[in-house]
Image (cartoon, rainbow, N blue to C red; front, top):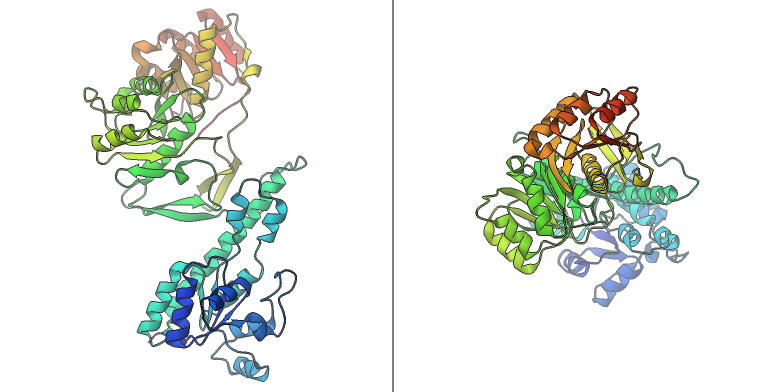
Length: 530
């Protein structure tokens, strides 16, 4: 038999009053629950005609300091924390005439919403740090053996259902479930506050340590997934807490198609983050978390065709990302019946209405996602889980300074080669190491990724490019350890190379470039992506 506890007295103090009046009316009229409330909550209930006591009637002390102190009082916490099955506790309540509190309804000041507002001041943020609310929630949750705690309006229905089926009482199972949700809420709330302070600290010109001593990442489950990388693995998609303010995969709206998979989300993130590197109309095609095609052009439809044609074999079944609104011409190119394209997902800032209507009719299962206008790039810290720990780093952004790139060979790049090298370099940044990208103009023609040997990555990129390797440029995410990379590139017809430099054998690679008439730039920046 579940341990049942009646609800005779409820304390209500909420900022989000959704469903509050109906819930309180049911408690009061149907189950005779005594209602006690604070400030605005008491007013809302009283205005609805419900009998409700002000919390000061319990504490015998007024709210002070503009409401900063109203619930922090022994009369409240004794009634919350007393163990009902411990005679000494119950005797103490009786001696001091302190009533038991059986239900707390409390959601917290809207700190996350406040700091998410544009132009919010420090004073506004600080004023929305709740003190009394979290204390009450923790106290009620700690004493779940006797006290029920509701922290979100969605829980009202479960409580009322249980009261109806258990003769005005709650079961231990429900109280435990509510307590678990309460502690999770408090943890997320404290995380949001700590994150705000960390961000404010990182803005200080005197702060040189963006990585905190203690890290408390917070995430919210926003989407259950059918399975993980493989069918036998459980998975879900979690979003940052506070919710990301920038357009990204976590905030994207799915407009059409079947549910996203774990691997879809990984590929969408990779594709979108590369597409947003470019200002000109851009398209990226990703397969197995590596770009197999990428291009920019004056028109989005042309960018798509060039990106797809860079490696149509790998593009089949891939993920497509655009950095601009998908128009009718781009949609027509995607759906071209002669091409017989198979696409898993498309992500873009937006879709022209006629373009989206046509795409929805094209394939029933293809997922189409809308991010809204792209601004900036990935923000915050970058995490990677390892067994027993967490690797944390700042994002790989802002390190490239094209004006500082150095030509280290006898021959300087032509203007066309320089633009192609610039394009290839930023694509290469998003390819798994060892990474090699071949490009012609603003079109990827070959990619070698994830190989243990860099020269093998060169050979794969050349093989992928085929006849398009002749006259292409080559980008390498890290330095050439040996000149064999240059010789392999030269044999394929590559005319220009961009790489970080920094190898003890740089002189050998430079000499090999001069031997073959290849121009080479050093960036001074490495972009490993493991």
